[in-house]
Amino acid sequence: MTRHPNTASVRSRYAAFYLIGRVLMGLWPVVVRGSLPLTPALVVYLTGLITQDNVTATAIAAQVGVVAHDDLTRLLRNLGCNLSVGACLSVRLIEALGLEGWLIIDDVLIPKVFAKAIAFCSWDHDHSQHRHVFGMRLVFVVWSNDWLVIPLLFAIWQKDPTKKPKKKRRKKTKRGATGKGKSAAGKQTKVARKRQRRRKRTPRPKVVRLPNGVRFRTKNELARAMVWKLRRRGVQTDYVLFDNWYASDDNLKLFERLKLHWVTRSKHNLKVEYEGNLMTVSQVAATVQKPCYHYYKALRARARSFRVKRDGRILLLVVIKDDRSQEGGRIKYLLTDDLSLTTCEVVKWYRKRWPIEVFFRDCKQLLGLCDCEARSAEAIVSHIVLVCVAYTLLQLFKPASKQPRLSVCVIKHELTPLLMLFDKRSGLVAHRQASDGQLSKVDLEHFLNPVRTRLPQLIIPKLLVFS
Image (cartoon, rainbow, N blue to C red; front, side, top):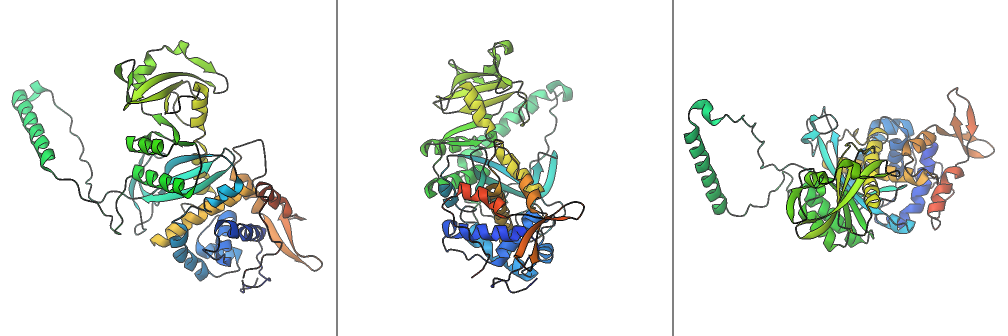
């Protein structure tokens, strides 16, 4: 194993290093177009994310080799400013693929339970554990077409520093319990009047700044900014999918202005206008008894659609009952602005939002999204960007199959045991190590064929040589 990465004699015992390096050398002129040089440290870090369980810079440098630990830490410090502004592997990759897809918006919490001085971290509610944990919240916009999930943009959300935590509510006592019902009621009305006067007097709120000087934005504002940027960059999609958290009025107005149809899930207490009456969506669903809902064999659930109005817009409300999909909840209320869709199509469109949950799970369990031990903001952003790049590369290695939801776990387990051994006759040859220790030769072109099939214009070099 040599420490001179700028020659053709670069040696690493992992065959994934050579595969990733060759694919990136073909992708770099198409995607990056010279704005960032392809270095051995970048290929080594991506190889470590894919093949190693411990993804710290020290462990990757010790296992993969080729570069030292300092080169990887320097990469994390200097890479974030260049790649975090744009899309991961850029929107140009989608243009090169020439496929039609849709956008998905969602956020994920990266827990940092034992952290104290890591950038962007704060206390936030973890819905999987049903409690508050210390970590950072990321808002993602990904592109998908059922068998490919490409992360495009992400933003790190931070809490409003000026907002004070809510006090615990006290239980209200009945009026006759203390014997001071009238006086208590009078005090409540006086307090309400004072609050109303105060609201009229208060000026417009000032722009809130985070400790690093960046303007504070809510999750919905971050989502709107990212969708707008992607639209300006030329991403051509017809639909955007999201859950009820991102179904705010401002988001829907922006999507309508950008000519994007949307499908979302709503809460049971969302008020809509149905047949001239203001009702919640659960009350609209109760106007028709459950046996009158049509059972769809393709959906494995009962569903029925209603035409409702919200803020002057005519929307399609689809109520699902006895739902057995992967997302929790037996009863769901879906809303869309595309009135041309049938009831079955609306449900299928919303279920296409699930790949982003698979993306979050795979990045956490397989690619070390939560395992970065860096403290600086630049290194954290760089690590997240490289995790997204590694996930996209694994997607490209995925063979063409009739199973659209094939996980990248299969590809990772195929690439990890591949080793490069030196043969006197043929030079470096890839071998697969079995559980009993026996080695068998492997043709690396087998892994590159899916990449060539999806990107026929891509020129993959035969040798891995860094300039």
